[in-house]
Image (cartoon, rainbow, N blue to C red; front, side, top):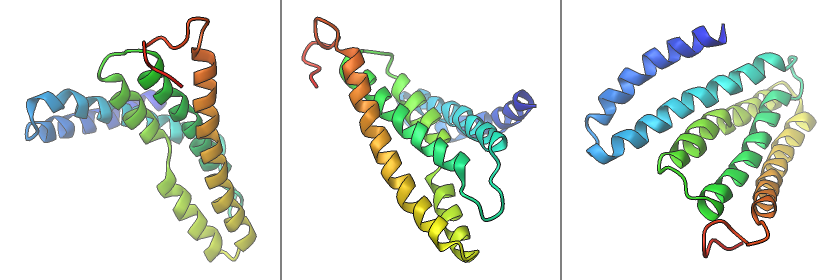
Length: 165
C-alpha cells in the first residue's frame, strides 16, 4: 500500500516539478527535483509513522512529537556531516536536508494539533505539547550536532581539512 501511495504521489509531483523547473535557471532544475523527490519520501515516512501511532481524540500527538524530534536530531547530525566532515555530491544536502527531512518533519501539524487541543479544552496537554516539542526538538538538534562531531572526529580530526568543530 505504501508503494502504491508513493507511486501516485510521485506520478503527480514529478510532472509539476518538471513544469516549474522549466521556468527556473537550468542549473537549479536538479536541485528543485532533488528537493521534490526527497520531500515526497519524507512525507511518506511521516505518514507511515502517523499510521503506526494514531493519536486518540484529545490525546497527546505522539507521532508528530516523535517525527519532529527525530527529524531535528537527524538534521543536526546530517548538516554536520555534509558541511564539516565530508564532501558529498552537491545534491545531497537539498535532497536529504531540505527534501527528505523537510518533508518528514511537520511543524505545521504541530501548531494545528496544539490549536485543536486548546479548542478541546485540553489546555495542560496543549501547553505541554507546545513547550515540550520546542524544547525536545531544539535539544535533539544540538544532540545530533554533538554526536556527529564526536563520531566524525577520528584520530586525525575532521575529514575535511579546516572543517573544525
